[in-house]
Image (cartoon, rainbow, N blue to C red; front, side, top):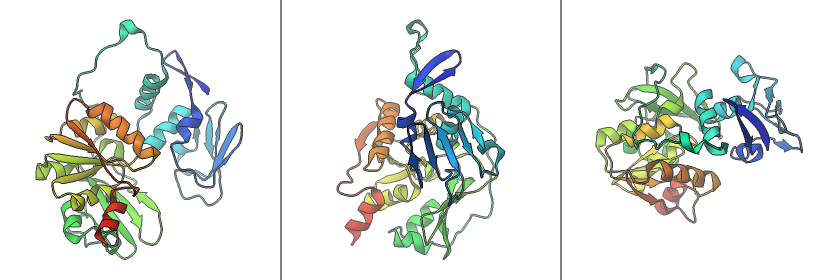
Length: 298
């Protein structure tokens, strides 16, 4: 446990539990420190550390000034793709001891937090189908529905606003598991992959997944379902509100068949229960929607 002071509230945060939700490459855990490859850039030599007693962290090889060092709240914000304030509020809600007299019941639909201006990107219309995505079982027609594609070296998966404007893009190398995004673009925590498809096709059922490929796989697993993705095992408040505004009747909790997927499903159940019919995805014995698709297709 570490002690964090947020808005004059002293919180005892389980730093090991919070950090353990992420995959750390070349990680070495000691009693007082985590040393690993940087989660924010390509890093072959571990140059990132977190002090497990204080939560202070540093990335000695960082180029981006905002990702060189900071406190634990800022680290979690970067890992989750949230704002600092949103992360602080989340920690207070999870670890705080609220004054019962000040507790208020939140409305089912809340006013969307004022977002940064959406940065519309161009040059992503009419993408050629990706051979890599086809090898993952995603047909040309499904790629066209989601407006994704690529070339021989990479898959290109644009994240769009509800009205179809490209606001960020995820790239995935075809030869190994390496991802990157557009630099000057809208933060993913303000977007939901596939939201435009669900709105355009007026689907009655959506499956909430972590990754884009799993979301697209759902269209082939069940013709009546549109898959959407939030990009991680934790949804931001903005993403939850965007999903709540979909005109759907049922939400499938489609997190991966592992601990992180269970975390997403738990959060989704809490956020959407009572507003929509909920159903858990059945992946076993497979890990996720795409693995299930590949196995039942062969």
